[in-house]
Length: 342
Image 1 (cartoon, rainbow, N blue to C red):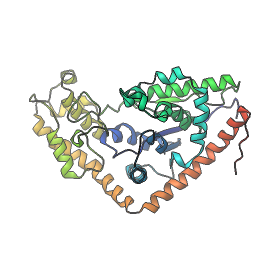
Image 2: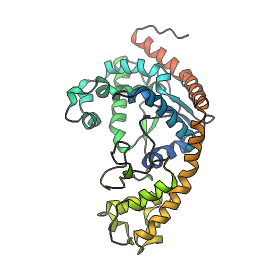
Image 3: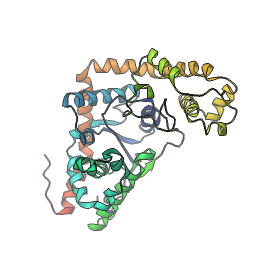
Image 4: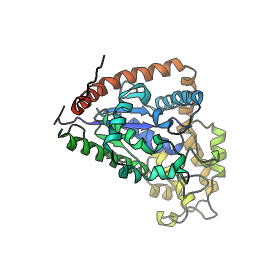
């Protein structure tokens, strides 16, 4: 494996914390479905070990893992084209994370802005796991010698850390190119989907108001209510995008429409310029319902068959271990340790 050329392999992980919302769906999951095609080898992981960096109710966590798996399948992830599994089912993630804790430097982790955001002012009371989880994220990627990782703006810093860890390991132990230096996959056409009540904030599962987001499992009436109540302004839809730059809530709804029909915001403005949002919003609702209703229905069907979801995850974990086990064994050998794999 040492000095090898790495085949293209895609890895991405999502935490099982709360319902997938429209921003997750348009910004990430739809892209996952595209990435599993075209001969790409792709692994999509439910990163449940990341979830426990803050306290989780065990029953809720178990339910959330199944719900996220059902959502992925309902959105189009196909176990015949990609590998879908839970992080905790593959021990190599945790094993490699400890090794990377010993490779990463305190100064590197201290620069991670997400820890500062999540820990807040009371960082002394945050878990060690919350501080060190970027090393686990690096392990998630490098346990499979993944070469490409879909990332949003808020994950770029963590991918840079993964690259630093891979380079330092390779240099420290003089194993040229043992770990690949993963490249980001950035979906240039996917706009950032913002909060329906405050266009300066991104749509988020952690927002206290459910009215701030469209959840993939929202029913048709709730979608209609949330869009009707979504904050806009009294001005009509303009002819040019530049006139939306100081109207973030209006811009957000235009971006959502454009993402759903796979066109540019300029195309949307050509169709709706001069119209009030009272005219635009019902058309947006129609699009959202058309896109999300089949997904929501499929999720409900899958959740009524938990044994089928568990089988998909178990089969995926078996496939994932076939890739990661030889890599972890070689990592141990490089370190001078012994790894017995049955």
